[in-house]
Image (tube, rainbow, N blue to C red):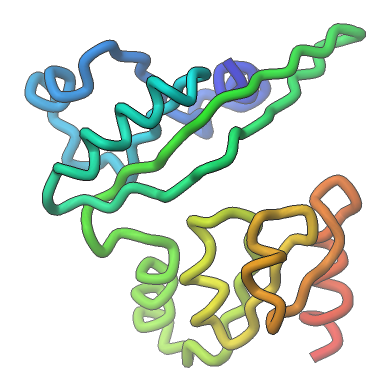
Length: 172
């Protein structure tokens, strides 16, 4: 629902492709997903979600993002506010992650990885933040507690990314 709402504000070219399916195995068998970057699986029930994670753990050749907390999203439409709570995981092929993508881009652009600045707020940003020349963590994120040696800026709600750019990138 959150991403459906977010898509409604974007041009068609910039929308996130969303397919809600009951049987992911059947969907993968019946569709060419060669260009899919990741698959997100979610459920509002922790019991059901944990069952899904047990099944995913048996699949070889993939990485499943370890998320143990519930995600909360808020949709504001006019005066109406809806809160959505769910557990989720992101699934990618082994070796597919943000850091590896940045390394490939840096190699292509002939940039030393020590010159990369990475800003993140989620567990799927961890490797990127730890390996970049400068790793910056958004303050209201789960990563703030796990990376006390990294630069920590304000939350997204308090313009943490702008703070990072102004304080640490533009002053370099």
